Length: 265
Length: 295
Image 1 (tube, rainbow over the protein chains, first blue to last red):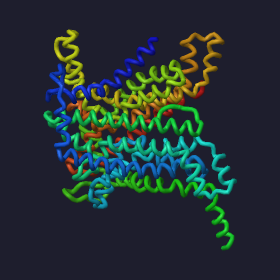
Image 2 (cartoon, helix red, strand yellow):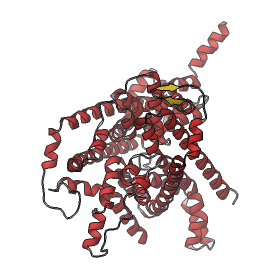
Image 3 (cartoon, rainbow over the protein chains, first blue to last red):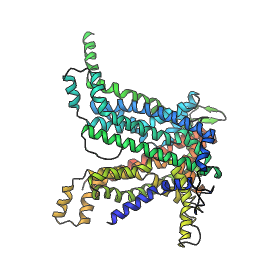
Image 4 (cartoon, rainbow over the protein chains, first blue to last red):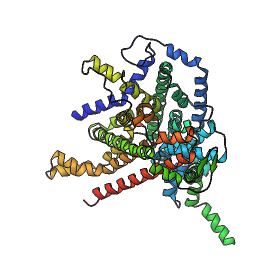
């Protein structure tokens, strides 16, 4: 019983900041403090009227979609290799691919910046895509790895035995079974890239992504309510995407008949 | 020659060839964008900045500066202490929750609980850190609420723009990282072991302390590492809620790179941070192995 109370208090602690977000986004005051003064949608209406903000959203979307596609593609190959084949150096190689998961992000950001500076390459959205792909690949490998591990290799063998080619087997048997994992990996990678700040901060050049733009706005107190409004939209979007990702992950588990172990990571 | 060729042809159809071929895109990507850059950081740390040019003669000067100048030492030490405090707070707070989900929640609701715990993690970190500033501020949500309730007369000032605020904000941000590994290790525990312990006369606490906890220890160790390693390099939280006394090493690395235009010094601090993190993690793993091993 006390544990249940503790768990509920813990959830309150976890959700406290997120609950405040919409409250202040609709509050009719530029100062972010209680008591609330009134209801307004002014801050939401200000969003489409800020061209720099719109541009940063576009940059972020391009970066997030590209990173998600690249990371999922790399993750697909790696997860497949890890689940089906034994090859020399398997552990160190996959360990190395998973390394960005445990490296402090600032180290990844600094390392990429140093190389780009040394090569004299210009910074821009594409350099952020490289950094984000590096960061998202381990998540893609983890998600897709469990998809590949969960389905019975006998299904593929049966397909070979019944005369299908390797490619046809992949397309007709393997792909449909790991499809939920692929969707889930795309969504998770997209969400990570959309939210990521520090790598983007170092590598973005003159076209800021959304979090980098927001960071610049946090210095101006009068801009904060608009940031709150935008944050509300972002949080709602993230929750939606994650719910869809979770739905697909569960459907994938149901399809392969595996037991639900819960969670993405 | 022909035999080598046929052997090669046979090898290309083998498991190891297929595996290597499939793993190579991601491996090459990580090699080009992680291994090479990390090597470059190490190289930069031995060079020096000569106005706009990089002087590529080997020097220990950056390391000497990092060790002797009090500001760098202070920031590094503070980063370790703050990260350590965050790790302890996060893991200690997470364990009961993970235990609750694993042992008290019905199987069909477990995935939902884990999902609930992970959602906040996926919402913009930047905005969450900023919201803690709003909550903990002088005129913040916490102070105004406590004043309205009449619990305090003066706003509490020890909760913003200092290391405490950094610890609270980071402990919140990394909560799911601690809960998940502990939960996974608790889930793996064979429940009949606990019944056996109770049947053999252990108290409920004894069974927990001598069976559950040691078996959950790998998860606790993993949780501690997963929280400790990234927090030491955190930039956003110290900058937003830390104030001058709450800044950490990542803030200095960023200043060296983007403000002072001294990439070699920044690289040196990054290398030192990596070395410190690795050293502490290795010692921690070794200690935990020793402690849980021979019993």
